[in-house]
Amino acid sequence: MDKKDYDRDPEKNDHSTITSTATSARSSTVPVDASLSGLTGTPDTTVAAALSSSTEEAPESSQGNLSRSGPPVSPDKRAISIRSETRTAVPVPRAERRGLLARFAIIAEVEEPKDYTRRTKWIITFIVAVAGAAAPMGSGILLPALHEVTLAFSTTPTVTNLNIALYMLSMSIFPLWWSSFSETLGRRTIYLTSFALFLLFNILSAVSTNIAMFIVMRILSGGAAASVQAVGAGTIADLWEVKERGRAMGMFYLGPLCGPLLSPIIGGALSQGLGWRSSMWFLVFYGGVLILGLLFFLPETLKQRIDVVAEAEKDAVQETVGADGASLTLSRTKSRPSLHRTPTRQSVQITTRKYAAILRRCFLDPLRIILYLRFPAVAITVYYASITFGTLYALNISVQQTFSRPPYNFGTTVVGLLYIPNSLGYVLASIFGGRWVDAIMLREARKAGRYGQDGKLQFRPEDRMKENAWMAGVMFPAALVWYGWTAEKGVHWIVPMIANFFFGIGSMLVFAMATTMLTEFMPQKSSHGIAVNNFVRNIFSCVGGVVAEPLIVAIGDGWLFTGLGVIAFVSGIAVILAMKRFGARWRVRMDREMGT
Image (cartoon, rainbow, N blue to C red; front, side, top):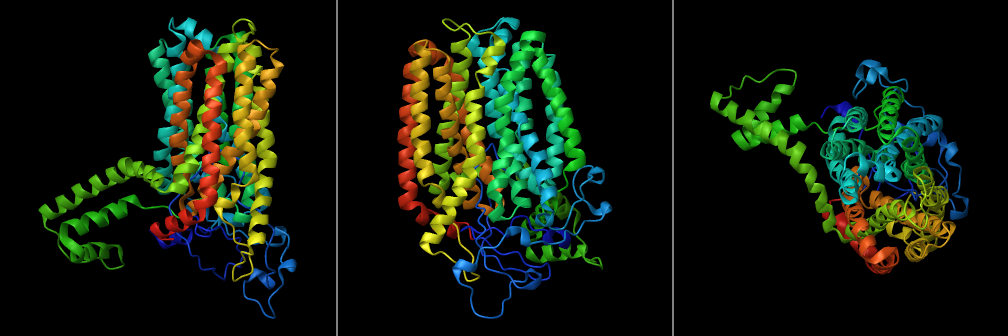
């Protein structure tokens, strides 16, 4: 790793116990006490209660330096506007910019992404949010047209539903590699590559000649679009300070939430007027627009990239010739090459081991992300988000199946409109939920008197599970039961739709809370935390999409969603109580084991 990449260290200003640190001038440095692996991305899907955006800070001396003269400032004088902290972004010369086709970017890469102006940060956040809408849009756009797809390929509804279920499964698996590759190749390269593949696979989906080809192409397109789930939240973490990240993360997740809001409406209208294949061509157009936006308006934001080849070569040399040989070989990177001669046989062994190590790091090591589930705080947070996500996709299948048949008999366009209520709940919770949780974090830190030596409030991830979690834990399970029985009994359509609106609010609060907590439990590699969350929750959504249709046929909407509601309610209460009692202990142990 060269010095320039080292100086752009990605997320070193975050702490495992989230501390609102004051901004210093570039000439001064603030020692950090945490270094961890986490979740890139992710944004991630998924989620509006973002990292704490407190304006509680101690006054700074001139030029933003942390050094102070005079007596300590009392807590009631700590609050200042974050707008008063300004630093000048230092652009990277065009020839030295990193990432795929970086010279075409209109927004210049800078040495410290957090130094971008707020306007530039919001532009980049907007671009990433729009990209984040692609994956959920791809899953939702076909929901109103599943019956037409079944007829077109002369298959059964259960087989047709596999295109949705396996699409979600691919969204759980592919981010493991997108997350890992982003740490090596950078954010920009991953965005551009993945959406080029998204464009290609949607073209092939649109021209599919049989159900097998269609399902395979859908799986691949879902996996390509899932890159934002792994990398998006990490991009937001690259740009925004911890105390500002709450609102930014909330706005970012409006993108993934607008996908489910708009896609069924677009898909229903297109399918009824032009046939279901037109939905796939719409995704092709959307992917093309995204590629242009990413190409021109997304600079590289990852400050430090991992040099996989250099690390693999170092390991291979050490394994083959020992530490002495390694130092001799590595000395070739210095100004004067070493005169050390490596025997041919030894050279072949080094080369073989190097490429084996590269393959292992690229294709096997990403699976190690799953090992983060050994930490109880991560495991139960991911579990709660996954239960919620699984019920969401069971609900999506039910809406299409129930309201396209008697006694409702709605057409494709109207069925698409029925996905609006829960999506409105997502948007409402996304806008206001993040601010609410930020206020809770601020209140809890003040109540506990957690001030650092620099006079800044110290925030803890487990503080996010307070009254917001209790409200969500009751609201969305109750809404599931409400929807199930009113839909089964053929009550006027507005009644189950009101239930879906409250389901959207409650489930969004859970998604927001869970995703933000994971980025705070694992601040140094937020993409890994997002990836493991997406991995588990999309497996649940895949199961929900597969079993929903046969279960509705067997036992009806009422009993299905009563069962899901009970499971969700019990799970939520158990997770909240466990985090309240053991959360601090788990966090400390996790920090110790991960060396932070």
